[in-house]
Amino acid sequence: MYQLEGTIKLINDIQTFQSGFQKREFVVSTDEQYPQDVKFECVKDKCALLDNVSPGQRVSVSFRIRGNEYQGRYYVNLQSFKVDAVGGGGGGGGASEAPEGYASGDGVEDDPFANESSPF
Image (cartoon, rainbow, N blue to C red):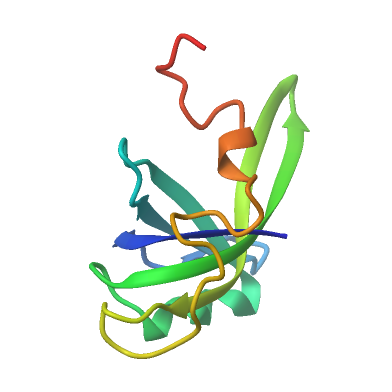
């Protein structure tokens, strides 16, 4: 499990596919010296997690890293299973244990695709 804290920048509508599968994507901006816009997705019944938050609100997002291969290409998704409002951005909610973003000290910064424009 990974955790990230930041401000919601965007919440997309629910996408429903022919199979009945549903997903909803949202973007959280981190509060680092060089802020990152990180896209997450909620799937199936977890889409409702975003009904109680709105753009501009500070949140703590708990997520899992999911990867798969399709026709020789590899994909990484950050699949959220918990979204809590963090004090100061309206509406109470859970607090994060880590002060500047990452509860476990790892997560998004370990994602090789997180900063593709970086030469490192």
